[in-house]
Image (cartoon, rainbow, N blue to C red; front, top):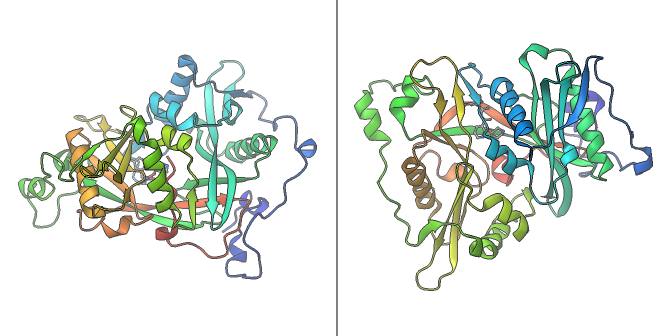
Length: 389
Ligand SMILES: COc1cccc(CC(=N)NC(=O)c2cccnc2OC2CCNCC2)c1
């Protein structure tokens, strides 16, 4: 398949798959900062670049509305991600973030925001190398401006601004296959509110299943079972960082989280991120940890429901409690918080609980990519320890 743009970029090329003579690591060397293009790429005449200050409620609302109306839909165009403003502020302002990497395109005359792309800095370990990368996300072009080849120029502009900060690698995901996935993950869904999921067409009643039998199948206990299971607090950051770093060290690609990163990414924020620890009553040590983020979807064209409340598995670590039991407790608290569905990818050790906890396979894949970094062999999802938002 012709990938005009991606065949011009420093990414693994399909033709290179299997060529073990190519070294693992950066594909192109950094260029001297003086040689990085100083001015923004050209846009079609009537459009201009803007840096989106998401601290401003007005700008954050414009970004929210652009995404809510034009961002990723499922394959059957029945649902569209509906990231909240609080979620966007959390996702885009981690330690060391750059405002200049929150990039918008607007119509010069009307000042209407018509496209968006972002990067946030992250230290990512690839095998034994820790690489500071940009995590690129939220690439969105207004539905009315599709096929104007805006996406390539937005990708080049975020790349240019990342280069200006002396960062030369990036990580990103997509639901489509472009050159070249480092791994391809399956997504799985665990019904929490099966009646609503069937009403809105997210799920279908199984063969030889009635609605009441289906509701009974997915029923969960009212309360969690793990002793010492409680919400994570600020004072847990050092212990959570310790067990999380140890756990993530097992994977080929994983974030290199500091305590400061854990404080940002994993401390509970209402309606954005939920995280729980299991504290031993005897030793008071933190033995386990689970977390999920809140990403609702708009339901397109259902007369009774407008929003699907979805939880997405984030990072989970077990040192004492069986992962099956810890994740069942995560399902229980998600149900208590009235989520309709709990989603997970088959990354890390998730495949050990998905089927047993009654997750069903989703109808698509999520592909992970690195920019300007070659991985010698495509990874299995279980070798990946990175969850993007
Ligand atoms: C249910 O509403 C949807 C609205 C839009 C798209 C999809 C399907 C889909 N593409 N799902 C995922 O990509 C996905 C499924 C399970 C876990 N994480 C996921 O994506 C995350 C991570 C990548 N950025 C989007 C959120 C579903």
